[in-house]
Length: 354
Ligand code: SF4
Image (cartoon, rainbow, N blue to C red):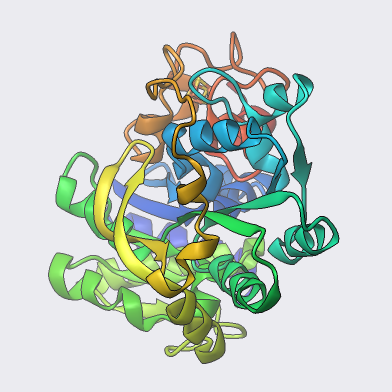
C-alpha cells in the first residue's frame, strides 16, 4: 500500500472510530521522520501523535552527565562519547564546557574507537559513555569483551536502558492516555517483536513496530487504527523487512554476556524496575563507576524551567514549555530534548510552526 493509500485508510478509520486517538511514537527517529515527511500535518484532527521516551540522550538522567563531567576532570583520563552527549547540560556544566576548561573529552563514532584509543595510550584511563537502548548495547558489549582480553585501561560508564518496561511504566503511571504504541524499529531489530507482547496482554494496547520512511509510519498508524477499530490489541510488525519476532540472537547473546538487568533512573520517568543494564561482576574491572570514588560531584539539579521530564512522558508538547524558542534554542539548548538530534524539542524547533 502506498503512503497516499495509507493516509486515505487512516482518514476512513479515524472517521469510523469517531473519537480522539493518541498514538505514541516511542522512538526519537520516528518523531523526526513524522515531522520531516509532513506526515503529522496529514493526519485527521482526531488522531494525535505523542512523542515518547525513545531518545537515548534525552532519557539519560542529569546525574549521569555529572558523573561523566567528574570523570573527565580526573588526571590521565579521557572521556569518549557519541556527539550528542557532549552538549547535554549537567548540574554545573556540560562535557563541552569541561573540555573548554581543559578536560580531555573525545567524540567517537563507536565504542571500538574508544577501545583503540585506550590501546594506543596504556597510561590513560579511557572511559566510554555507554548510553542508548538495545540498539547500541551490543557494540558496547563487544568492546568490553575485547577489553577484558588485553586493555585494562578501558572503562564503560554504563547508562544503557531497555525499552519495553519504560512503555509499560507510562501506561501504569496513568498520567497520559496512550491508545496504541508505534514501537521503535532499530531496537526491535535487536530484541524482536516478542518482548512487547506483554503490553497488549496486560494493558490492552496495540503495538505496531514501525520502519522509518514516511510510508512505513503511515502504514504503521493505519495498522494501529485498524486494531483499535476492530477492538483488537496485538503486536504487529510493519517493519517486516528488518524485524522478526525473535530478533538478532547474536546481539542478544552479547548483551547477556556483558550486562545484567538492573533498576534504572530515566529523566522524567524516575526509577523503572528492571529497565537498565549494568556491567556483570565478572567484568567489574572495566566499570567506570569504580573510578568515581572521591570525585567531587554537585547535587543533581535539572535546568530551571525546563520541562524535558513532561515532554518525555507525553504530558506536554515543546511549545508549551515557557523556554521553548525564547531561551532554549538549537544553538543555546537548555535541556537534553533540545540537544539531541532525536529530541522532541529539537524536532519541534526544526520543523514545527510554533
Ligand atoms: S524547550 Fe528546552 S527547556 Fe523546554 S523542555 Fe525542551 S529542552 Fe527543556
